[in-house]
Length: 355
Image 1 (cartoon, rainbow, N blue to C red):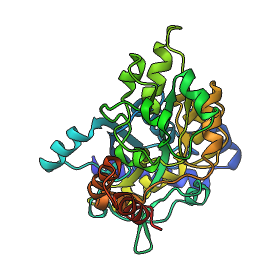
Image 2: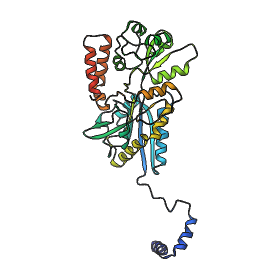
Image 3: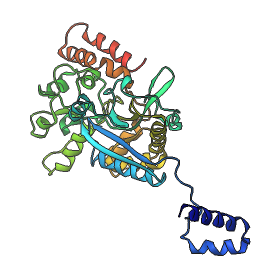
Image 4: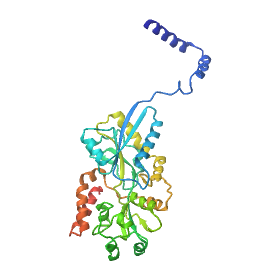
């Protein structure tokens, strides 16, 4: 039987070599289009991608959006399959402690150590298009991860407070009328953001603002979106992006255990996500592109926010991971009005900004 198969294979090979071209062209119609032309994929397999959620966009689900983008990437790379698993920071920490590891991470700024990632084989070309002030995760000349999406924080004001500021973001909120409006309450935005505004005391939470117990509040984009969607005509307010600072930046990189081939595919996915077409689609989430790509928003507030953030102030992801707790402690001391605390806060902030 083996001899017969070998003879048959040789006869077929000889036929293909010696048969007239006209006959071979005729055979082409026997097979489905593309079967004889398509080259096999360079690599086939599954890339396990953990999407770690520490903030939510203005609307929609970043996890679902990333899955759709990963599917589009896979369609352009036959044989490659990317499984996106969304999880909270707490769930990530539990799985990591059990020794579980993916091939790639989508992670928020400041979460991962450099040692938890591996350098990408080549720096994604899309890095050149990043907004000013936005950092790739780099060390010793190597790129470990790239930002592909960002969000941020807003100052919410009732109409009376908005009149006090003249419809603009105040440079400092220490003025008596504004400070009085910032009732004590749980922080909705991080202490770092509040301290950056020059506040003292604790800004009111978005819930207190909605209940009418505060004239102003700090909120991230998702809290703002929830308030707008719940607006029933009784809650009138203005919202302004108070500064260009944000730590709500999502990164993509390869895990430390990932082999060279998979890491190269992760790098290609990074470039794909930074293409203008993919960046523009972030407007559906009310999120901001990491690049200067044009994005069309249904709400003017979001369009104005995007335009105002041509240059952003964002931490270096590795420095932020190392100094985040100390920075937040400095911010809380500055908010308390402790002498010299504001200066110490700004010194450490400059450090994590890589300045």
